[in-house]
Amino acid sequence: MTSHIPSFPADFVWGAGSSSYQIEGAVDADGRGPSVWDVFCTRPGAVVGGETGVHACDHYHRYQEDCAIMGRIGLKAYRFSVAWPRIFPDGTGTPNWAGLDFYSRLVDAMLAQGVQPWLTLFHWDMPQALQNRGGWLNRDSVQWFTDYAAAVTSHLADRVGHWMTLNEPQIYINLGHATGVHAPGLKLSMREQLLASHHTLMAHGSAVRAMRTAAKRPVQIGWAPVGRVDYPVTEHPDNVAAARRSTFSVDKPGHWTNTWFADPVIFGHYPEDGLAYYGAAVPRIRSGDMEMMCPPLDFYGLNIYSGAPVRAGPTGQPEAVPHPPGMPLTAFRWPVTPECLYWGPKFIAERYKLPVVVTENGMSNLDWPDVHGHVNDPQRIDFTRRYLLALSRAVAEGVPVQGYFHWSLLDNFEWAEGYKERFGLVHVDYATQKRTLKASAHWYARVIATGGASLVDGAVGATTVPKDAVVVN
Image (tube, rainbow, N blue to C red; front, side, top):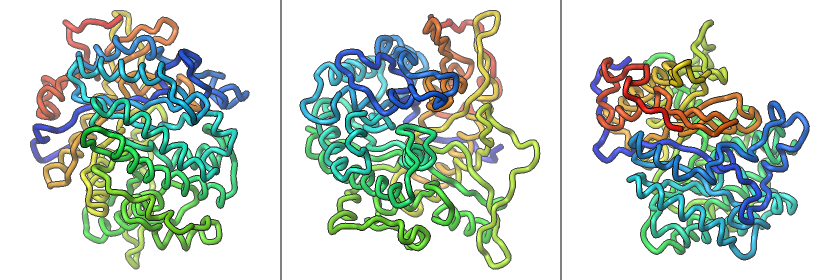
């Protein structure tokens, strides 16, 4: 698995993550307005089993218990998102104090456990009131998001030092505005999809400037896009060059691209191959649009779960290599490809010259409590060990990786898949809301405590729950 002893910096950020709609529940509590996901979940057939985030993990009422679990695992940081409609129930106007107060109490509870809060402003739950006005298709969305970002920053930046603007714009544009399988459930033309993404990137840049102004102290700001990784089948230089080229190309349908979103944010312009590929569908770019998108960032967040093997063709062009029969798959049927956590951060850091944080990585597994009430998930342990060993290789070679956030802390509402996919380090019985630390949570606690050294220690990397483990009720 690795020929080197894993070594992470002493200040490496070991974390786990979640998002507001996936765990909070309490969708009408304390003045919260409806989000696009609240409305989408009411569509017949939109979500597996007709399930919704109405209750989810009831984190809104159980956040203190969940923060205690973070402390028990030893997390150094917790990535969470704010629900926009809790802060602005109608999308704009006067902030809802009760919503701001919830996140203030949540932050305080994290800090009391010694856990750094890493806050994401947008993890897909736009207020429905703004969607009724066109959502990301409306150019006013830039100002809507900027005002929201400034309000949250003003309230929490005295205690929150790390911020992300957007989570995975590739997904909410592609699945929410192209295929319609995610909220808001639209099937738009490519020109409209690209217009929505254009406004999204402008909103990001405008918000970053507003956040730096609103913060009363220096803050670290980044974002958390999908990290699409193509990795070389061998480390022959030709294959590495082909994988790098493929990772940064815009040549396939949809929005599964790094550069169409990141080049504007980092460099201030769209990639040339993307402009050629999308052609007449590219929206009109007004004066100042591109400049708005690219204020300096402090880190580049990467959500990486898997990658695709690539080799150099006869003329050096990238060629996709099929996964072999019997390829290891997660319960979500995603391929297990640890290589992506070496090549992804390496390629991104080379191109964009920013420190990298793995803001999401994890797997869905078939987890349930055994007759003793323990949840043994050896597949998740093996998956995470392999991926972290790959990441440690990147670190050893000097790639500036600052942290790793396991997705997710809790089992939760998995969007259109409802509750059938379990990503958590902590098992949630949705009928009773009982939390149970899985074997992987105990294992990850050891990884954190040893700074990653236990990744190659079979004795402390055991895949079963320790005999003295206490089940959390």
